[in-house]
Image (cartoon, rainbow, N blue to C red):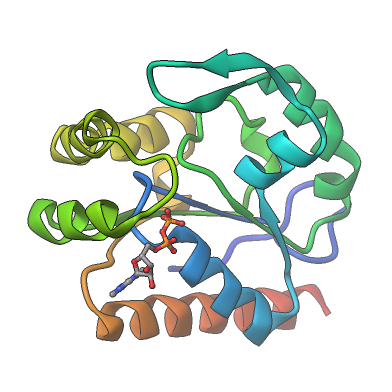
Length: 182
Ligand SMILES: Nc1ncnc2c1ncn2[C@@H]1O[C@H](COP(=O)(O)OP(=O)(O)O)[C@@H](O)[C@H]1O
């Protein structure tokens, strides 16, 4: 991961962590945020708490995200930099927002077990849908189509060792970027 200069007037980078639900985005983001001081933004939570949705999807038991509202709500904060954003999709954010895009990937069987353990709102449909999404590399392709390849990192997230390594390499990247900005 070679840091590049930051876009616009940002004094700190913005990082996007994406991937199928259950791949470890929030766990990874929380640890990176703690080590770097980046502000953690969980877009799913934001959609709920700030009503950035256009209704409820009965089939998948989730809010239907209003992408324009989410982008409007985050624009100023993202312009200032210093954020780590967590969402299971990535094609509707402005490309200019991010300096690094991490896509977490988890083996099907591991992901299946993780999702089955989820208590709230995880029907069999939803588990199967998400595992299929992972098998088809939906989010990896979305990220590759939406951002410059140089800033996209596809990282395995199967084990605690993977988690530690993903956090460590991102913290190192952040430190390098901050050295260049100063
Ligand atoms: N690399 C990893 N190795 C082992 N367990 C993990 C890893 N990443 C996440 N987990 C565990 O998997 C579950 C789902 O992780 P979570 O961070 O909530 O995923 P997401 O935010 O992508 O939905 C949690 O119980 C978490 O502790």
